Length: 65
Image (cartoon, rainbow, N blue to C red):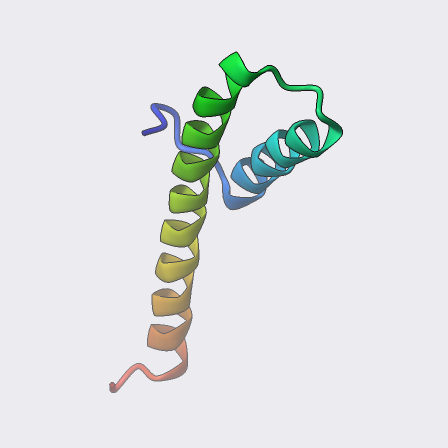
């Protein structure tokens, strides 16, 4: 996974760069596996951020729950 914690925005920006490079056709087949692996890691980090944020917001809205 990532060694330095990225913010949600940083992770999404990197995913967007990877996707743009894939769409442009500017990625060699040799880079493809590493790029897809990295994008998958980043998406996992984004999901963690979203899950954590959702739980925190829910806790703030419904403190007795």
